[in-house]
Every structure is written in structure tokens, then in C-alpha cells.
Image 1 (cartoon, rainbow, N blue to C red):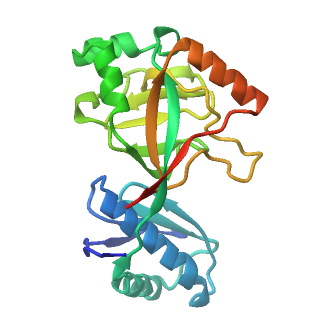
Image 2: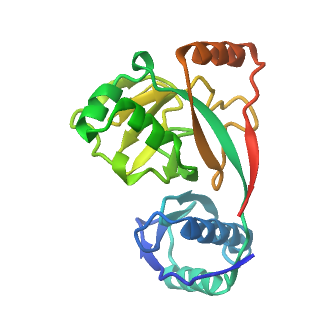
Amino acid sequence: MSDVEKLPIIFKRFGDKAILIEWPAQIDSQLLKLRIAYEKLISEHFSSQFQNTLIDIVPAYHSITLIFQNEIVNWNKIIQYLKTLYSQLNVLPNLNSRVVHIPVCYENSLASDIEEFARLKKISIQGIIDLHTQPLYEVYFFGFLPGFMYLGGLNKKLHHPRKDKPGLTVPKGAVAIGGQQTGIYPINSPGGWHIIGNTPLEIFNPYIDSSSIAVMGDKIKFIAISVQEYSQIQQSVIDGTYRVVYENCHD
């Protein structure tokens, strides 16, 4: 367990059936722990205090949105209770997360934007690959698409605005960079991020219990592979013989 640094928090009305809870605008590992612990506390205790059913908790980097079944009429009472819960959060659990190894092929045939991205950043393609595979990225939350992981930890040298004109079809498995973030498109989708690689892994599968390859708090490690390795892994994924590599990671 670790002590809680009491970051300031703001509660806002968000329509008739939701409350937005915000912390300072930052992407931070300690804030992630705080947010996860607070979400757990709300999930465990809120329903016993109020009749208005809490139907969803939607996380973001530095906020959570509470969505209720019915229109909220007792705003002040609910917000005061949420403040009380927050004040009771005195310790944070260490996250016994995993490091998930995700193989990525950065070859041009699978990375439609990597040459242009390298030119824009004035870094060699190998330099882009080295910078992208160096960090351990942290899974902060899911959104945009089912199974789309929002990751923290992208090297500042790779930060770059999204495309002016989004593409109509980004292929499943595309590994891309947009703004201060990197991520993986779990399905074919429109998108405006710069595609620098592709993974042959199944990132999201709604037909199995563990639908996503990772959960909030896990770490992601990108591993550079060749086109030949990509094809081999892709076939083993299709055959059902590929086993994702997980390492235990204790904070």
C-alpha cells in the first residue's frame, strides 16, 4: 500500500443523469492508482446509500463520469457523499499489473505513415522504432472503440499532432501515434493517427471472457518483429496456438 497524495478534485453536473469528477489535467501513474481506487470505492458503497442506480463509471486520464439510470434530483446530497468517500481514501493498493508483450512490425508494407512520420520528426525510421519500443506504456482506460487502449508513456520526441485529414479505413492491428499518445486499432476503423506499424495479435475479442488483451493498470511493451515473424505469428493466432507473453509487474 502507498500513501495517498490528496490531489484537488472537482465535481460537476454533467447533464441530468451524470456527474463529472475531475483531477488536475495530467497523465500520471499515481493519479491512475488514485482513480482506480476511487472507482472501486464508489462501486462498492454507492448503491447502498442511494436508490438512483449507478449504471456506469466512465474513466479518462484525469476524470471519471458517473452515469445514473434516472434523473438526479438530490445533487447536493450525492456530491457530498462522493466527497466523503474521497476523504476516506487514505491508502492506495499497489497494482499487481502485468507487462503485456505486443509484437509489432514496423516495415513499410504494414506501416503506411512511418516514412512520412520520420520525415516530419526529422528522425530516422530506425530511430522512430527505437523510441517507440523503449518505454513501458501504462493502460489508463479504454475508449473510442471497444478494446482501444489509451496508453501513457510515449517519448516526447514522438509527440505529433494528428493528421489534418483522417483516413477512412485504418486496418485492424494498426499501431499509431496521435498527439501525445500511441495506441492500437483493435478493429478496422476510420482514424486520424499516424500509422507506424501493425501487430498480428487479436487485441480485442468480444466472444471470449477476457475480451481485451490487457486491463487498466497493465503495462504494454512493444516488440519489433520482421515481416516474416509477423506472418508466422499471424498464422499461429489464426490457428489458436499463439500464447500472449505476460510478465508479472509489482509496483
